[in-house]
Length: 450
Image (cartoon, rainbow, N blue to C red):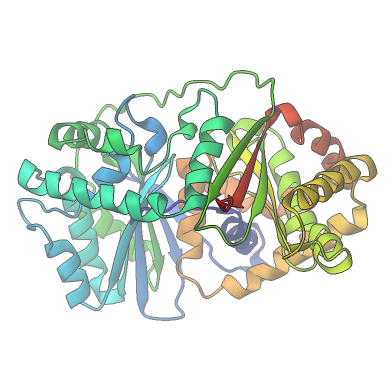
């Protein structure tokens, strides 16, 4: 159930491109409609009549970065426990009913949100709405359910992190990237703190954050808003709202030194270098910079047509892989990442040297307006392939709303991305690619002991 969401960007770009029709009738695709229940629950409906199926996603505006100090992993732990039953539906019945009715369901946690989703036949929508609404306030927990599940989470951590040198390096890089902000803490939590989680900590988190006025319900598929609204009112509308704490995050101080993290392991076969810089998110930027960074990401590091790939993989034959990653979907600051893995026979120091030289050259030479225009066109064209997806729209809109945005912000994506210029990108690179605001992670095979 735990998801790291290495990069939400690709999904966001695709989904937002598809939302262009919200302000353009001639190319309509999703046309989301929204309303708010009296108890504060935001509801978004995206009609998609290509197949008689629906997806329900319930997003809570709370994640790992909202946990109390010393309780890392509590948000993800509660995600697991949400399947442990209520007075009406006993432990395991939720998933059993979904499976019995031919559906699929899961959940995921990030630093800024927690989401639960089910995909079922259209005539089963009322059933999943009843199930999900019931556990919004009806969860019943005791030590008999909680303590064994805590060991499941610890084993999940051992499997995902303990056996992965790359994941271990990533955790230390993130802890080095954010000096004070809770983004430095793993979503799944530190093991010694997971071990201390219990029934009381889980229930306290649940009672504090899980409420209709801190959630977003998104229904996508073969339905209309007129069909969804009475069901939402019937099952969710009767749940009382509650006072939700202000989302207060500790601020990140100025960063005045570059950091370097090295991980060696016998499990590593392909060495790599990752350079990560602090970067603005949609909410923290307050301007068009995140859209410019998305275009920059497309130009220099997305796929085989990108500048870095053509230079370091094809022309110079130094790298086996190279690329970039940037997602502006964060409630607070985000990061812009560059990475390279050398070809066999090429030293890791040489690969890093060339990657850094490319960054320096980019800052000096900049990108052209023609490169920007072609990148924007590719980003919009790529959206065509996601038009049949029930998951794209609710994922895009859910992440936007839970990180401080709105449906209107999503709708405005084509206009804002289209306004990006080469001058804006070139000025922005000097502000983002700052060594003192960076962390470099080096993943190496362990040295042989003679």
